[in-house]
Image 1 (cartoon, one colour):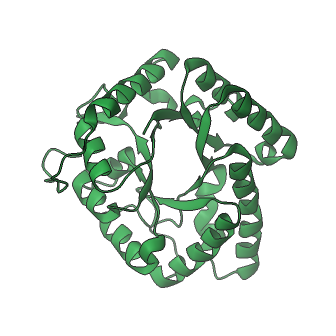
Image 2: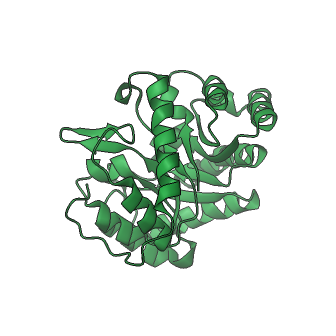
Length: 278
């Protein structure tokens, strides 16, 4: 387990500019956030791949800019739009394969979308898209975005019950807070199916801070995730106004790297009381 940073933290700098910054900072792993269609074109992809291969940084995940459209594309009665969505996402899966990333992050449908999609239909469509990802060796991982269909722990449980062993999740800590949910409850809902983690810290009145600048007990979190089977990495994902400068961002990554080493071995007790987790 290692800690890295998402290129999204540097927005509006481009993914390539951000990736070069992470390489210069010595980040062992990264998430690449694609911001527009031009960054899916082969010439741009080749530049990302060249930077990744020359440096040895491991890109573990890709985040598509079209996440805001996923309900429109994939939870719609309009089949042609679903088919076009699959064509678009083939480009993201192809990019993942080129970069060696094994996961694509998925936000999904908005929680209050005005459509007739039941959870059963939603899961059916998700399975079809996930099957396309597997053609490229990529796992489609559903994130707990607070304003989307899986923002609440109970929705995660309903989705998981229908997906069975194929369920794969991105746990995003700030999204748990913004949903007003308990972290313990979300951890319980996702237990054993977390494939990717977006980390941030919090303090009273501030729900997204660099790790180490707030109140979250990261050692406890790492131990819990390890005890429930998590073997992946940790990606710092903040908004640009959540940190003062790049140095602060890199220091938060190093802080988590240190804690990961201190957290092993996992604690035998994996159930967490809700009190104290936000």
